[in-house]
Image (cartoon, rainbow, N blue to C red; front, side, top):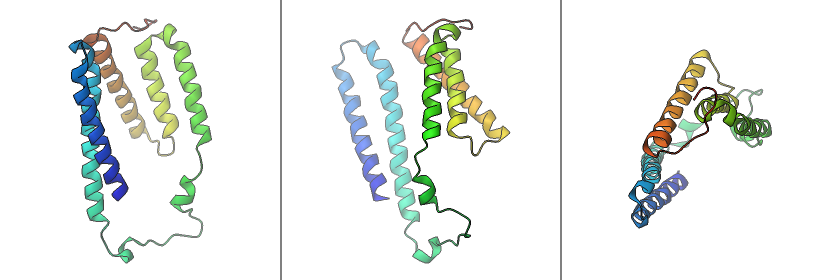
Length: 165
C-alpha cells in the first residue's frame, strides 16, 4: 500500500517535470502530442494516488476480516502469478511482427485496429465472454479513432496508406 503511494507521487513529480520541460521546445506545434501524452500521464498518476489512498484506508481492518478459507484444489493467487506467461509474450511478439509486415499492405489504421483487437484477446482470453469481446472491439476502435485524430488531423503526419485507408 505504501509502495503504491510512493510510486504515484514519483510519477506525478516526473509528469510535472516533463510538462515544465515542454516550454523549452522551439516549435509550439511540436509540443502538442507530447503535451497530450503528459496530461494523460498526470491524470493517471493522480488516479493512482487516489486509488492507493483509498485502498490504504480500506486495508486498515483487523486481520481476521481479511482471512479466507480455500479448498484443497484451489491454487493460491501468489503461486499462480509467479509463473512467467511465456506463451502470451511469444504470441504478442508474433502479433507485433505480423502487424509490421501487413501495415504497408492494409494501412496503418486498419492494421492497428486489428492488432489492438488481437492483442487484447491474447492477453485476456481467460475471462472472455461475448459482452467483454464486444467491449474490447469497441475500445480498440475508439483507440484507433483517437490515433487517427491525433496523428492525421492534429499533427499532420503521413501514415502508410493501404487497401482500406
